[in-house]
Image (tube, rainbow, N blue to C red; front, side, top):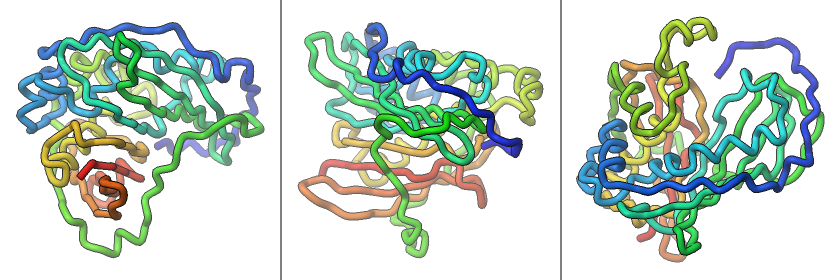
Amino acid sequence: MSTETTAARVVEFDDAGLETWCDEERFEVTGARIAEYAAATNDPIVAHSAGAVAPPVFAIVPVFEAMMMPVIDVAPMDIFGRVVHGEQDFHCHRAILPGDRLVSRAKAIGYTSRSNGTAITILIECRGETGELVNEQYLTAFFRNIDAGKTVGEAAPTHKFDERLCAQEPIAVVPQHVDDNQTFRYASASGDPVPLHLDEQVAKDAGLPGIIAHGLCTMAFASWAVLSEVGGSEVRRLKRFAVRFAKLVFPGDDLETRIWKVGSADGVTTYAFETVRGADVVLSDGLAEIAD
């Protein structure tokens, strides 16, 4: 997502920070917070807007405080200005409901050095207060033009988009629009106050044309598109939902989420999807697994 082409800076990562769980974070879910999140992501699914059950990407809200802490255990603080959210992958064991008291923790499980930067994989666990697993999440934190010099530990599970699908007509195409005030509504609902999404001057000082939309907000757009078109608008059927954040999205953008059916096995149907802005793919490698 950057046009930076300078040579990669060699940086030593701390392997001792791998496989170390951060402190637990606790979060109580309310119907009002679910409804606020649904409204902030233009979610048309009635159960979500009513606060009866959380939309899938709401799962990031209870884990927000925990999710980036393990990165600090592995990567030096002086390179944090280069980090972007590379990929997100939700593995859903049950839906999040009002009244849930959730306990989350996260750890770095590995990092991969590539020609254009280094990716750290974070595993996040979200459990109910009695210990049952609610969801697992794989977050990829990508450091642009940083060379850790090696690959250590585990990478996130793959969710690669089969490019041959593009030769086929999608089974559904959902138009979407990013509102001018979307980032402000999403920041409040999600608890993500990063200034790049809220302050024009900060964004321009970072080399951007203006404030950018939260990647997870765009992912939430894609989630309701997929659920509405092929999941019966029923979040409880969603077993996995994954994307790669390919390009920046801006307030005022018109988007389109395109969905292809991949196949079915063991009572679960797999779909591939992407979200585009004109010719630009902004969410790539989209994967959804939905119980039949």
